[in-house]
Length: 553
Image (tube, rainbow, N blue to C red; front, side):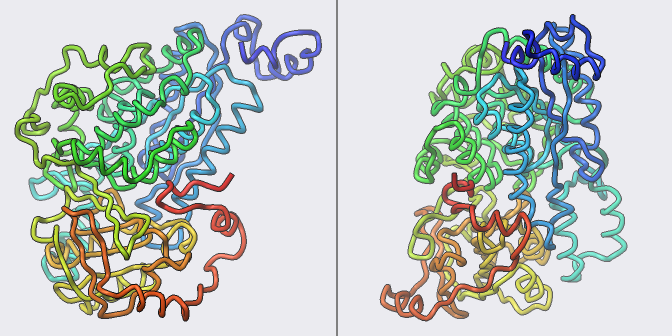
């Protein structure tokens, strides 16, 4: 066993002495040591119940003959961090999580890992660590939150953000918003729509790194606790079989993940995280591959914020495996891909059926013949930009309008709230990219304000930062190169005509190359917003959003 490096031999008597100080007996030390990375804390709703999930996973490890060893990981709540300087730390925390899991696993020579996670950056951070370490590892999520109920309709976090815009537009009273505030998030779990956290937890099933049900079984369900026990048991089996992430996180697995991404209409943040995980696994994913998969994969689900269904509905409909089974029927998956279950994806899909066809549409009647995400290119985004096209109103799929340029999220939100943005405008928010932000802030406030004011069919938003998984409308993010690197978005001026053609995957500004060159000659990079601490180091090392915003090696 890998852990023999700290347990066996005369020279390891000091190490064993320290292990005995922890209360371990010989019978425990003779078994595989399984590290359980528990990202519990008391500030993230998606993580507040993870002690319970971790205890269930530890029980599973013991049932299978392993010794569970728990250690922590940090977790940021994107919703609480939204709209202020704290959001700069969200994406940056992904790298800290990956590094800390690597550090603990290598320093203590665990034989395998159970990664107990839930929310936005924690899932990809842990998967990045698993790929980097390449020791047997398996993921168990805390599960999605149930939808809230407001005035007889199901609601989730995006609705309360949009409610703020509705109040400012006079479409909702402050008293109604206060009632909605109490009802929107009814308890533990990752927010109830197909936002980034639930997108990543669903994709983890398609990647083969979690057992079926990981993405959709509700956080409050006893089935979630049973799944955690089975995950702990399977972690020991992975060690016994020496089944490692390098055998699972293959090019075929990432293709399967991208196909599910398109079918579900996942968050655009997956376009940051899948390339980052693939980078650690030694697999190349570029933005062109994402478009190729999108072109041939139909969009089968419209969950909140794009539709009226929520994660509990997807679970009742058969979950991720039912969606994958539908895709498999069209020959859109690599069914021989290995999974942590010890079975191939094709074997896992045997007998899976859609139980609620209004939630998971058949291939013969999709919402769209193409996937939910598109990568745009053009003279405004030479290295690409990303849009959740399944959430764009048909009338906004093609749009031309004058740019309203802002150098921060706060400036844009203030202009929107003051009514200084008109129908037809293209709101451009720049210097919010990985380097310029720094941290590529997720911006739900501007998109939710636009939607809440009823302008989501009239106003487009473009940024070198990123938008929340809870975003809908013509919201185009990840524009690369970013403004801080002198990308074309830095050269825009108020009134420039921006041309958006999502079906053609184009994003352009109506300027000649000569004019762009002239403006570039006079452009000066702004002074960094953060000049000390972790974010300053992060800004120096982080790469483009087009490559997953990974850190330079």
